[in-house]
Image (cartoon, rainbow, N blue to C red; front, side):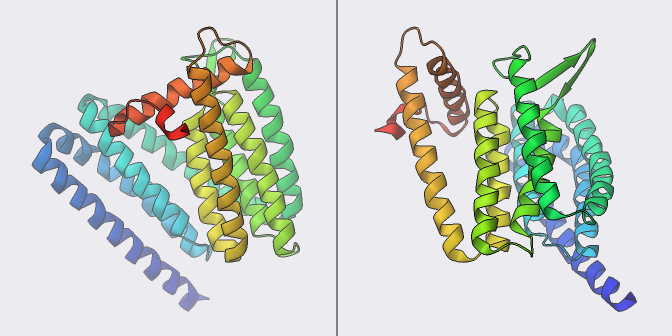
Length: 288
């Protein structure tokens, strides 16, 4: 038992060392291009490293795959660097965000440890029912900045999409890693939950959360499913994304869109905003 734990801790130490080196290289690059952003990122980095280190130690101790945490942390770090390059004065908010993430990680670890004793099928069913109820509540809630991500209870407001994301990730993991189901059943169950999640996030116009969820879902699929099932999902998701972009592009051409076309117009406008970060002016050329 002690030897197994020591192997896990050595593995975690190697991952933490490489992640620290990656952050150091990023700081070096920022220092050469943007001094203010480098100083701000240097202030954020200890909290970010603490979040990663806790997640890595817990994952290795539980003998879980660390690849999903590695990729998510790398993308989070790049996002923080981009945010600080655009607005270096926001580093206080990012530090607070990462401290909250660390607290949620500790609570999430305890929750997942308890959920490990529950039937995976029950976890998957809970994710399906709970996320459906959450999306209905959010869609009925007033919009804020064009999205329905927030829920108000009196004077208290909170972003319900964050616990929804955790619930969906638990459902994906339960479906894809269920040892009692065949590969085909695991794939179909996970895709059904993903279709529900995609429809829900599109209806509330929360594309950033959907993209993060899709990325983690694909990583879990690569880890737990045979290659042919992963390839089939990529084709399915690619076709769905292409159809969605084409529909949003059409909605952007309408002068006074109503109903679902108005929703497509809002999503298309948000896509255009995101694409401008990479010097792409419009989503419509991708639909041709």
